[in-house]
Length: 153
Image 1: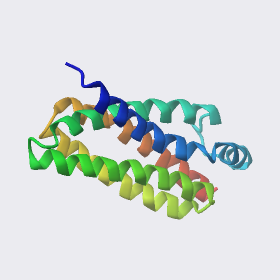
Image 2: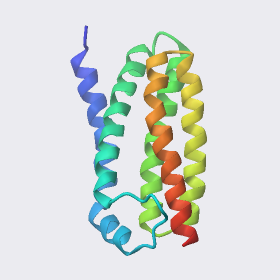
Image 3: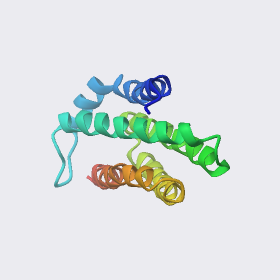
């Protein structure tokens, strides 16, 4: 049985964080066009598509944790850890937009370890929740490569 109200609320939370990050999209797009980019850098439009998919995955992951948060203390901890990671990813976008590339890269490393911790923690709660984290970890790994490449170039 799908509990629609919590699902809609969790979608709004997750997509709201994504929308807040997207407010600077035009500035980011212009900034990205002017950068010396490392090899394998995708076109600017790819970021919007990937982040939208990731935020949808995050919403469904959040929904599952939300439903189980009162059943086990570790689920409540995982729920709050996820919320922290969601905010951290928005912060990385802000730092990059401010052209603080090395600081953004350092924050990505922290975020990467946070996501890895979530995967381990989620695997003890729900295998599906842990697997839904993997695309996020892969994208943050790639974003780290791109950010370091921009900072170096």
